Length: 198
Image (tube, rainbow, N blue to C red):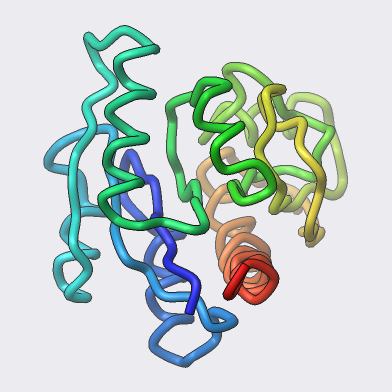
């Protein structure tokens, strides 16, 4: 069994997809051991609690990056995490975290990287940019995390058609349902299987 820590910052839609995949025994021998939020009181923490998953909060706001990374590493160690999953985690982690879990941190991004990625590109900003550029196809990417924001090795991608009349909100929902919720659990399962017993 590979112990998974899921990092969250908000509503937890992708966390829920992972919880549902775990309930179907589709996480490749992985088990969500802890959900760690960068913000207190978010819906993702409620989702974890409902699923009986231990939670903790490592506050990013008002904390120096080095202090945040140290606190995060402490929580990951306490959870005995072997795989780190960023599911709507809005904080950039430092090199000490990336080095500690090299090849074992996965993120989901709501575009077909390298398009519409990088610093400041998250949430509705990504879909707004896609619509402003007039793309006909967008999607989601599951990728490993390295020191370049959204620049790690691509694991899985899934395309989603952009339709006439789409708003950023409508497109965000379609990408989540038709791409993110499908490829993210698969990518996590593949990594969990890879790191099981290593």
